[in-house]
Image 1 (spheres, rainbow, N blue to C red):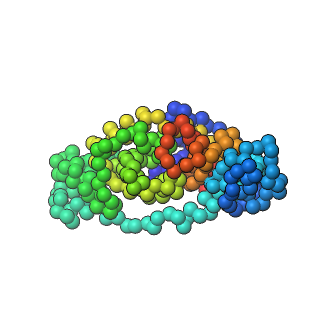
Image 2: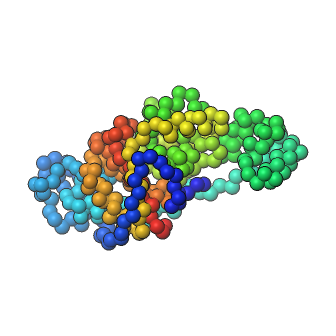
Image 3: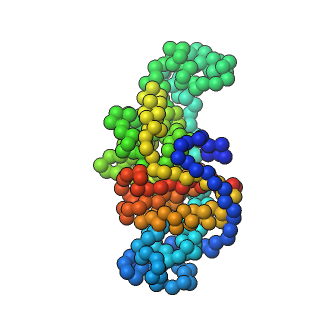
Amino acid sequence: MPLLKASLPSIPGIAAARVDSAAFPQAGQGRFRRGLLAHCSNPACRSGWLHLWRSPTVPVFEDGWTCSAECTAARVGSAVAREFGGMESARPDHRHRIPLGLLMLEHGWITQSQLRRAVDAQKRAGAGRLGSWLVRQGAATESVITRALALQWSCPVLSTEFHDPARVSTVIPRLFVDAFGALPLRVSAGRTLYLGFEESLDPALALSIERMTGLRVVSGIVQESCFRPAHGRLIETKFPPVELIESVSETAATRTLARCVERFRPAAARLVRVHECLWLRMWDAADPRSLQDPGKMEDVICLVGAF
């Protein structure tokens, strides 16, 4: 499973910055009431609820309005602590998977001699996927390899038919599409997102997308010859603007992310963890669950020095 490191791919429109650490109080999450007299969603708020100089409707972070920058930092700090502390239990259980060659051999799709030749060729070259070597040597077709990979991961084979990059470019940041090899294909009327991968699934990414968007995610394998052109077209599509930040600690991340919320003044915002990243998405519309114009939202991806 790929993980983001300091050497991330260079992607246009991404700005990087490093921030210093600072301590912030922890606070729980709460509901709020919008209107002329809005109530601050920070349970530890000490500044009172009436701020004539501040909008009573924004900023909103995770269903709660905050009355000051300090209360915003407290709410963001609570979310950061939640993502660091709760991710271990949220990770899908590890499942042992039968090696692709053995699985194909068991189903009679290849012979022992064909498997041996492909493995030997892979070792001599020191690179390449076993499935690619089987196809190159004529032992199996690409569609059989795709079927075997789907069986290995207990997932469906997904098609790129009806894939419209512009309609799914707001699902996840371009950085995740590129770094994790993910291909959002389409969103059904039942709010199900079909997420394609070329060789192996990324359950952690799928879970983070579900938490951020409210969509049900169905992951599957896409045939290589279909995946790569569709992936390339998606990369060239307009995505929401994104800012990449490096932070030395959790408190530094809290400080910077809270500043982003205060600057954008979102009508809705949410924070989730994706592998080694904290992903903050901010919307300028009150309905964050809708797929809207990329220009009406902003992503912040924060890399924290030690997890």
